Structures are given as C-alpha cells and as structure tokens.
Image (cartoon, rainbow, N blue to C red):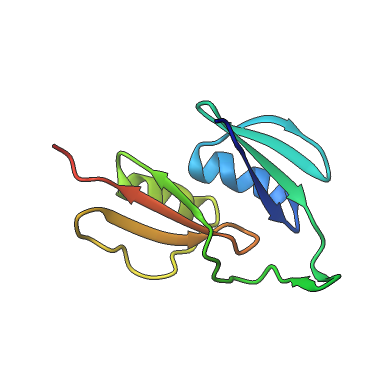
Length: 121
C-alpha cells in the first residue's frame, strides 16, 4: 500500500519555506494554492485551505492539538531541533528524554510535528 500525506495550511509559501529549510523535505513543485514535497519515497502535499467556518467544521491555524501528527525519525535530535528553530519553528516544551528522545513543535500553520531520535545501538 502506498499513501500520500496532505497537510492543510493557510500559507503555502510559508510552509514551503519551513518544511525544506527546517525539516529537510525536498520541493517537487510549488504553486500559490498547493505544493508537492518529498522525503525519500514519501509524498507530502501542502494544500492551502482558508481558515474559518467551512460547513460543519471551522479551521483555525493557531497552534492546536490533533490526534494525527507527523513523527519524523531523525539521527541527531539536537541538530534537527536547531535546524527547525532556525527556520522559524518553536518548541512546545523541553526536549523529552527516555527510550526515545522527542521534541514537539508546530509547523507555521499550527500542525503538530514530533522529531524523534531512537536510541543508538
């Protein structure tokens, strides 16, 4: 099974700046209302969806909690966090250390991202 991941944002250009610069995604194609990004063989679509009421739901691009988020496995958590911060990211809390080391942050549209470093060895 193959699947693509769609990430709704209020500003495609800002997302296209953050995901490649802050997280290492590759830009395949970019347009005002959408962009195609890749990490290895995984496809990500950045889709501009306006905030506000839309039928029975309302989109809000402030920082929000959602049960679905991206977990990105990284080899060097400290370097990955610094890269994300340099691209405008902001940690939600201190880095969590344990069986896996974890940093929680939002993308520019408030979508949750976890940077996860698995133990070596």
